[in-house]
Length: 436
Image 1 (cartoon, rainbow, N blue to C red):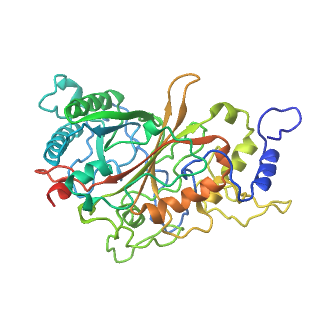
Image 2 (image 1 turned 45 degrees about the vertical axis):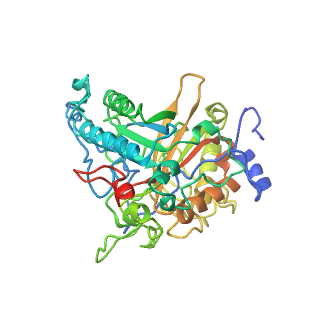
């Protein structure tokens, strides 16, 4: 990589050279579409990525509980909490549908209790369950779990993603029959919930993999502030706002029948993105979970202009290089005093957005991970969307083809999950599948 005289590492000039040489050939590494822009004005999105709202720091956070039962599972539209644990299970040999149902009933009952600050029946440390701290538990189903209810119930898209040339996947991070996304604002509460749900699972499944993630701690940033990843970038600017018409269509796959819906500057998403989902998933959505390693050592060698040039946004405010504020609509035709486009056509923001139709949007809940000084660092990129083929893959294909951020990022894990609808108070998650 070209460097400026007297400096080591990456420069904007070097990236310009790489961008010109790249053409359509692609750059090693990949990311899954984080930090691309959205518009302001009349919009169906909120500021930021739905991060935790500001609360008074008087100890009142602990008792706050997110609902568990409902049409949709919590942990998708829920304002993103500070901590997450993802744990994937593989079924033990010989498990049948009846045993899977017993497992799901047990997990549902205990998750419902824990999220409301109540100890499960077999909880020997019940004091640790008292403060739920916005705990949520979200269930994801893999194909081997779904097939127990009948192979005709497995949708075509519930399979590994197509191979991307930039992937360097660890197959141990690409498997699983049941995923639990456990999120909350207190790490002790989360650790206790993880242990209880693991104990529920020992007779039915083995752990395939697990990964902890984190964001800003409770109270450390303002209401609705977009989180930063380990590169220092604002991450999640373009998310559809919880409760918006955009969110309903993009994630749940159907509109709210609002008389005068409001949409973001990206345009009006189709109202039928969930039409292809099987009946047992009505009220649910899909999840693509990507584990993206981030090379912080080489990122450290890039100067600020190079970093901003690769993303297409400023590091401090997150504004597009063609604008002044984070939520300004990117102008990909704007040029500087030299006649060069302010946002490179191979910058991350351009590859993830420019020229794509309104349905090509996702909702991402991202969490950083760090395994210690000199250890692995990266991003757990949870992408929720109604239709993987129409929404996620067009973005990912473009980013895998060429994206300046690929110089510093490499996908090492990839899984696809069906997110069932929420449970009723006398039911369990997945009941529509096994009893529908």
